[in-house]
Image (cartoon, helix red, strand yellow):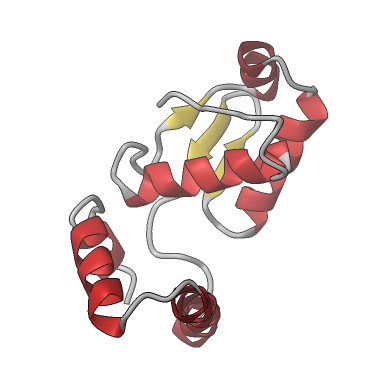
Length: 133
């Protein structure tokens, strides 16, 4: 998987990395037990501070997206998420609410929003997510 970092977006670089790793998992580009580049490798590749990569990896490990095997590296964690279904639902509903607020604020109809979601949903690996219930 290739990472694209932009220092001018206003989004912290570690957040860009965490977002891209999560998207890679959701789209099936990063499979469970896939080894990610080491902190040093990725920081050199992206020309960013190693602490930035370490922060992204640490945050994703805390969320159960990644795990570390000492001496071997950082890997994509297998499904399901260690979070309870209730906790996952609450997080998802918060994201849905933010999406709905933005859609209304930007003048989209509910039908347009549902069409957008339906089209984008085709890009994701739902069979992996279904195993987390």
